[in-house]
Length: 282
Ligand code: ADP
Ligand code: MG
Image (cartoon, rainbow, N blue to C red; front, side, top):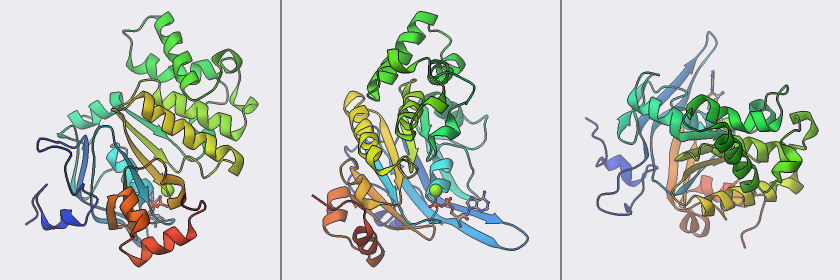
């Protein structure tokens, strides 16, 4: 029978080897997750017995090739998809269905940045309304002026000038600017858990460094915010991740301290990912 935190599996799963304190409780915890997708033609096991913890204030990079299960795991962690076996908890509360306590807390306390920024930007709205909408939905206690000030703060914290951007439409933004506005929207609530799913993959190469700098600066501004940073490219995460979890064919093949994995990869799959990384280690 499988138990939770103390199972043998945890020493090589995506679970922190040395908790930050004896009383450290993960903010988000996925245990022994199994998720399959079935169609008339085929059945795919997207996740097979995957365990991962994310603690407050840390950035965990979830790395793996296309189809390895990264987006599925990110969605499951946020309660946007379900597990068939295993469990998902947020702040030690179950995340299973929209009525669950964990899901309700996640709706208020999480943010999601997608690969294609235009997927989260309503083309008919100006930037001010796009960034403000999560506050309108979730934080009715704020006055209109307070909301406007929070919107401007969020736009400034992604390195853009609110005066220049609030009345633009998405079509007037470059890909890099649109992604920064999508990040501003995701952080306007100051989430406790931010999931970014390949946030740089659809952005042209020149703007990628700016996007990465934006995430690094958000971490400095909000040190208790936890991040799950999903990427197929190990080179991208080396400057931002505290921990790396490598997924391969729906299973955790390696996890641990980011510098240790980059300097001493344990699996041949991770070695191949490092060799393929777009940015050389420095
Ligand atoms: P990644 O984000 O690492 O590229 P995904 O989590 O998107 O991988 O997908 C993992 C596997 O699950 C892939 O084989 C993918 O085709 C399959 N998959 C993901 N979502 C669905 C879905 N909604 N329906 C059918 N298959 C899916
Ligand atoms: Mg994906």
